[in-house]
Length: 69
Image (tube, rainbow, N blue to C red; front, side, top):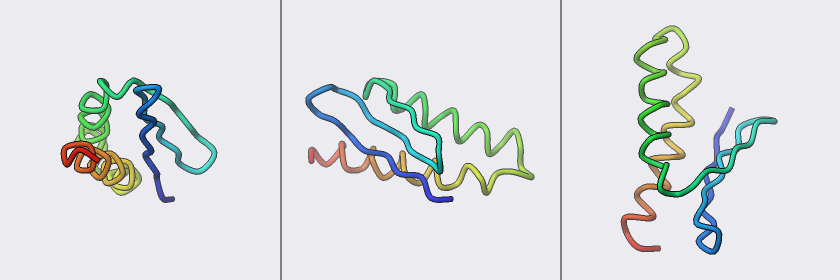
């Protein structure tokens, strides 16, 4: 399953969507969520692949924000 992460600059939030799950969080919490999903990969190596898409989407969003876009 592919995960998407989108940024809402007006609201100061980002939304993560994967399959039927969706969550919206403060953009200030992006590093916390990225850390969480990386930890999940480490804690549950048998399921690490299921968190890969989440990490990839959040890393992509972090890069976009770092570039000021």
